[in-house]
Structures are given as structure tokens and as C-alpha cells.
Length: 427
Image 1 (spheres, rainbow, N blue to C red):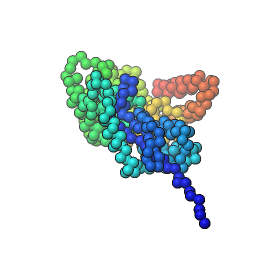
Image 2 (image 1 turned 60 degrees about the vertical axis):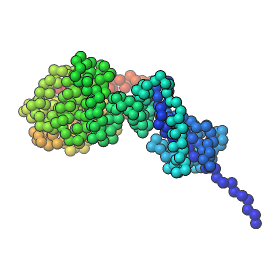
Image 3 (image 1 turned 90 degrees about the vertical axis):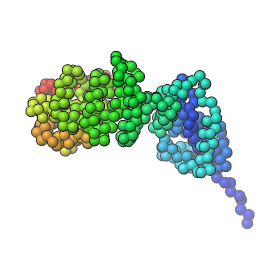
Image 4 (image 1 turned 60 degrees about the horizontal axis):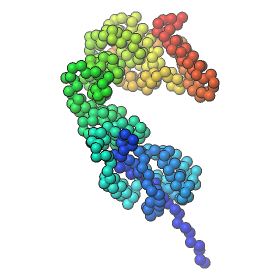
């Protein structure tokens, strides 16, 4: 019996290729990413599309528009990428009644990357009047618009390749290395920036930070400080923190919150006492910061001033309600509440305890003062948790016409309570 022929299922591929030569966009530059939609024989079904990066929403919209025109295939093979959310592609496939599968580019398809990259290099990418450094500057400016960490790194590396003296590209890369835990590499890159901009250190009348050209060097010193800290070289980290404060007394990067802790770890008790005396003069009315308050309290306890240490602990405990429980081995407050600032959040307390808890292990008397102060504040901390849970719940009711007025009132009440407790006026 003759059987009817079955049509072969239509299998298409969504391919992408990163090109290495910059393209202009307004006054900036970007490294293009090309999207292609190909058929079963790998022939293009539509003209390729250039994007600044792989963006899933843009890609889905682009593919959907062509499905509208051509119809959807039985299966869509999507080249894997860090930017893709596989579950979202599955939802896309359900909407279009097509099977979606993320795949590693097959060898015969991956040749497309080489071919497109080669053709891209043959195309002019910038006006002849623009220098390589100008293109590098454009790439760096455009980085802030990119969401993909992979693409941001690629753009910065290209900028540094075009202009080896681009300290702005280099400092962004150094900070990336620090963020991923590559401390030796981050330190090395930050030192290279210091070498490039070393003339600033010998120049008189430099307007540190105000002059934007000085910022890469200051940021490089800050990265060096953080990297040496994480590498266990706390004396060197303390010295770098002090250098930063000498160059930039207003301290735009926040070195003052780290330096006393590094001095304490390095057993420089006289230096840290001198630091806080200078701090009182230089930063009167400074923002509350739990790390600084705890370091100050520990220093005062070591000097035998228990009453002043207790006051600094009150400030620190109320600046981050998670920090004291971390040091005391107590159950921390709930985390699903409103946090006034990032420095008030649980992760800041976790980082602090992971790096500096050993300081309190050395000083039993200071730990006792901390425990007593925390117990005294227990009713206030419980009230703060209630208030901040209410603020967190309000985030789901922004449609309320009275939301803004109610929110401002509750935040002000929270701040007022904290200030009253710090000043000893809670009763």
C-alpha cells in the first residue's frame, strides 16, 4: 500500500555574532551584535539585524515580526548565550506553537562568526577624521547603556586596545575584576592606571575629583585598597586609604569607612585613635555608617572609655540592625522589610562580619559592651522592624492616592525614632 509522503519539519536557527570593530551611534561607538534567522539549509530567511548587544526582549520582538510575515517553524534552534533566559524562550515557543531549543552553535554554523567578523573588518567603522582615542572614548561612554556584562567587558577591552592610555576604560575593567573576585588581576590593573597618571601625584594645585580627569586615578587607588584588603595585606590597605584621604579630603569614594578597620586589623591602635580625632574635626555631621561606628566603639573600648563606646554602638546598631546579631551569634531580624539605604541591608552586615569579626574576638570587654547595648535596644529594634515591615508592605499599594504623603510621614517617623534613641530621648 502506498503511504503519503510526510513533509519534513521546518527547523530554523536564531544565530548571533559579535563583531569586533566599532560602529558609530550618534556621538558614541558600540561593538555590534548581528542577529540572523536561517532556514534548515542555513540560508538566511531575512536580512540580518544589527543590535548593540543581545537583549532578549529585542530578539523576541525581532523574531516575532518575522514569524508574522513568514509563519512559525516547527522548531527554532537558538544559539546559547549568557544573556538568554531559557524559561522565557520556552514561553515564547508556546505562544507561537513552535518547539524552542537552545543549542551550542554546530561547527558548520559557527563558521558564520568567522565569516561575518572578517567581513566586518573590511568595512569602514569610523570617519577618517576621528582618532583611535576618540573611538575609545565613544565606546566607554556607551558602556553605561549596555546591560550585558559580557558586552560591557568586550567594549571596554576594545577601548583599552584602541587607546592603551585610556585610564577610564582601564579603571572600569579593574573594578570588574574586583567584583568577580580576581583581586590580583584587579590590583595589577589598578597599579597600571596609577603608573599612567602618576604625573598627577607630582603636580601642584590639582583639583582632585572636581577635575574629572583625576577620577580614574582616585578610583584606582580605591580599587588597590579593596584588593589588598581582600588579599590579607591590611597594613598596605590602610596606607592606601590614608593616601586617598590626603588627596581627596571630602572623600568622594568612602575610604574613611574602611581605613580605621584596616588600622585595627594591623594593630595600629595609636594610628586609629588619631584617625578618629581627625575624623571628628574633618567630617562633623557626617552620614551615619554602621562600619565606622562599630570601629569607633571598639577603639573607645580599647581606650577604656566604656560610656563613649556604648554611644557609638547605639549609633552603629541603629544604622544596620543586622550587624550586632552577626557579631554576637544571635538570630538576625527578618530581611523582608524596608531598608533605608544599601548600607543598612543584611549583605553589608554579612560582609562586615566576614572580614572584621576577629577584631571583637580579641576584645572581650568590647563584645560585652556591645551585647549589653544591643539588649538595651531590643524594644526599639522590635519597633523598627514593625515600622519597616509596614513600609515594605506599602510598596504594593502605590496606587493609593495618599501613598506619597503616607510614605513620607512613615519614613520621617522612622528617622525621628532613630535620632531620638541615639540622643537618648526615647523615653
